[in-house]
Image (cartoon, rainbow, N blue to C red):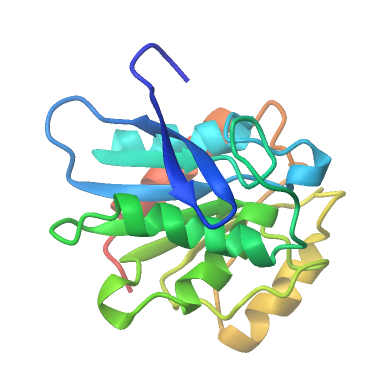
Length: 207
């Protein structure tokens, strides 16, 4: 993302996992792990929406860790239909979550699916303080039920994951969904708006 980004590798279930770490100025008040979009369709840890999530977390004083799923970039292994990718996320969380600080979990598109599933497999004392899901893949993946204070943002004009699909997933949970009017799946031209909305939501008191 910038000259301050630290690249590291950790041992994952399918081999090395490439990670990128960004820290806010001064002392971090917490940490966030961010999952990128579908690896088969070009998703990487440098995706623009992922970077926007990084910037939102940095703005509230959180250190961020994003990583490449197996078979992407410097991460070893190959596509595993979403199963092994959840294992990758859990390995990153186990490595970088600081039990002494608040922890949040985020994802974009397929990465939101991975984040939702990974959260269900974390022990109660290791679950995220809050989750942030942008353009969640609610049509093609089996999204898990998420906590009531989860931040969900979706574009009205999303042509990859229809807004209706996300509303259908959220409705049984009585889960609010923030809809950005006229915005597509990749938030082209609206990344600053997305960041501002995320920061605003992250700074609000939890439900």
